[in-house]
Image (cartoon, rainbow, N blue to C red; front, side):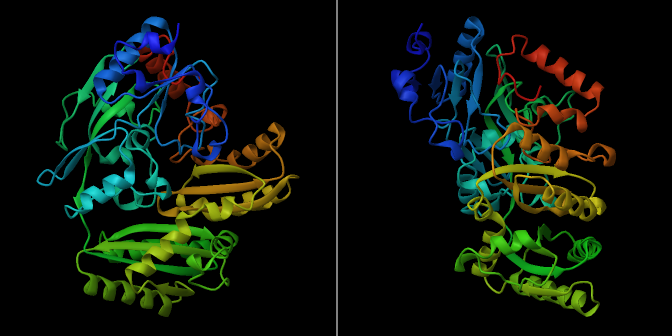
Length: 459
């Protein structure tokens, strides 16, 4: 039976794409040249339509994969050819901005940057921020529990979701659309859907927590030659800024050099004289006073030889320039024949030695051509980008082993913020106990007994 026949009672004809209409669809923004393999793509516009779709899929035992902004890095949106793909692109309404409650109510397909722009007009801030904000949709952001550049101050997506609406595997709508921060009335069911990568339910709407928009933003690049000095400086700035420190990004020298050598738009703020570069951000309430405080702290750190060099942003355009360097990771990827990405987390004091050992080990692997490291050191999250000469499975696994070996012993994780998907499920046991995985499987079986939602992902 055709998809147009199966879903005609719940969707309009133009909301159902199948056969030739799939030729211009894809499973990831980096693979736009590869046509999507799927039974159909459906374009619901509200929660009821999602529920009606899932009821049909439950009855017909059709597997379902959800597509949002298609920016994930672990294969969570990949398909094999038989799936019903539900795209959230038409679930794109900002329903309400409540300035008194400091909340925004949105459908799952709203793009993150559109949320930023909408609340800024009300002098509010949605603090979750990362490079893919111009295409990432909030449903995917929540379903992967995304992090980004300001986790240090505001937390992961999980900390910013107050209310949630989701559709379970049999079409039941679970709706807890509350604006309240405190609700200790038994199980917090929304947490089941946050970070579950669409395997337990399909997120359709959310209420997000907002903050008052900062009146000041200061940033600086700082140079170091010792990792221990990076940690000392983090503690110094965090304690003296009294809650204003919002970002603390670490970039290894070779990564910094590549990030700043491709154009004048990302010219280097500091010379290539140091082993480590830190990009620091502070948000506050008074630009003149906060800038003076920020500058005084940097001068104090220099005088006490805590840091080797520093350059402070003198204008909003300087701040944008500094963050463009960190966010535009395509400057690393563009020169690679093939690339392999990692986002690991580990205890902050161990980052320097662990990453140094990986640089040495990776350099000995035949087929590895480039090695770049950078990340959110204040929350223990380091990203690796590896350039390699071929796509062989053997080389991939050798690189995987090199990056992941040792994480279990130090209490680290193979996924700090990108999830597990298909690409990392073989390594889940490195950061979860057998008992934890068994409980996860039990939850999956209970909530999706037919295994219809995002099958083959995580487990």
